Image 1: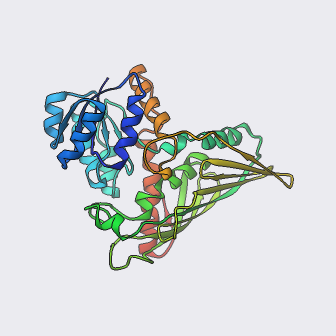
Image 2: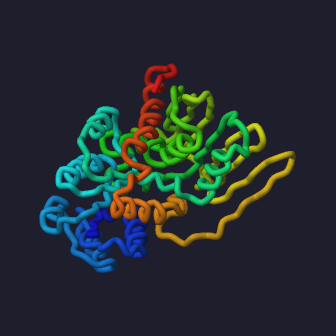
Image 3: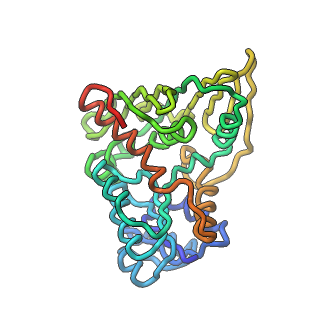
Length: 331
């Protein structure tokens, strides 16, 4: 299938690597407003380089487009692709505001639209999902999740788009920890309400968005979860998600899984999978992208479609609303 990547920043390299290992994909174009970045990607992976995605769509007619651009361009580009009958796989977030989300959900879709919540495909997450669904762990009592990473001034000032509500749509919630919110939904079910707050602790004069957030989440099935995320830490520590159940406690920490049961702990280790990009991207991109292509080819429904991905965004937007209003909000 003819494939194009729009946006040739850091995350695009992860997509290109996954495509290079996939027989179903034929890269035909790379697009970036910085021509040298698109040219470098095209030279390495094949296809042509463009600076205008509309020109690329007119000339190349790709069957699948990967959207790896800054946040504010995700929905406009996706709408254009859908109108042309092109399948879309976009990086998070699926939108930046409730209005943008509602508008895109209402767009008729005759193509597949997937979102890269790739951590659902991590092997330790898949194992936890299997344990929870088997009933072995017993009833879920609740969960907690921690994202403690470091993002310094240059991360924002050198990007040209991060750190503002207009172009990034938020801070640690929409950029870093939305993946963790999505995993809580994937493992625990749909959220019902949330009470949360946001803060800017360490870059007050540099960014206008939050670097820290905390929340208390209630789910429709009665579960609750505590959530904390920050980019004001001194280092990028492994993300922790811990689920307390009747018979055991399951702790995801980075790429590992620890099972606590009957006063004992069992660490389950997974062989390292080499991949492009930052360690915090996780290992799931390769599996998610392959699944998306097989779903398109076989006419199967892609499980992390736009509607499924929208739940994490609505939870995130709920935290913003709760902070502004000062009380819990229903979702």
